[in-house]
Length: 241
Image 1 (cartoon, rainbow, N blue to C red):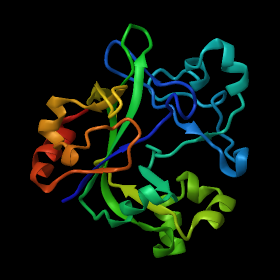
Image 2: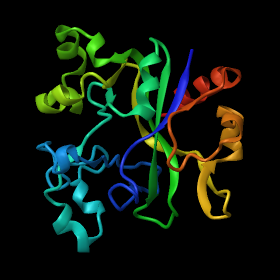
Image 3: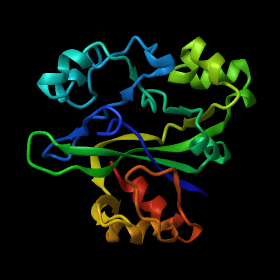
Image 4: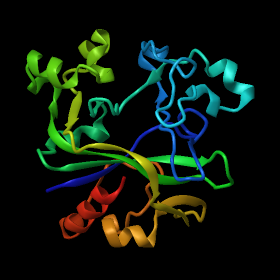
């Protein structure tokens, strides 16, 4: 079995905000914007898409001063948690094609207190038990329609045509979850220049390991869990609700 940690969702470097975290531990997953061909292609925007938790428009979570600018911004809703699919055509994510049935893809995101004071941190928000994974070109047209029809990269024909030769797709089983309550995994620690960054907390290092000393998870590539920690990490992740 393999387990991978992967950061997703909006952040201050890609969208200008963190997702909202609420006092009871619930949260909203706010996707990044859709920048395909520089302007976006999705008909979903921050101004017409509601969060799954509060049912408020995602636009609500942006500062009022920039809401007019973000209202009609198309969003890149991926991963999606209706049929549990994820896609990415970029080189850092290419290794995800090696995931096998029964592996776990664990998503974390940057969240900040919305209805209470809580500084930004990184939290597990969802996980897939992998059903299928591979390059888009390895799937038949029938499989793409059956398993990946709701994925951003597949449902937009022009995007798929542009990316299919390098697009990695992952399909989660019915044991996959968008959590009801986020689980914090980070603390602030210094980078090599002494500046504060988000790193895996000591408590979470006992669950996931320390990635050979590379504990920064602020803006990192997928983090593959060492086999020594797989059993413990699997039990921990599947206990989350």
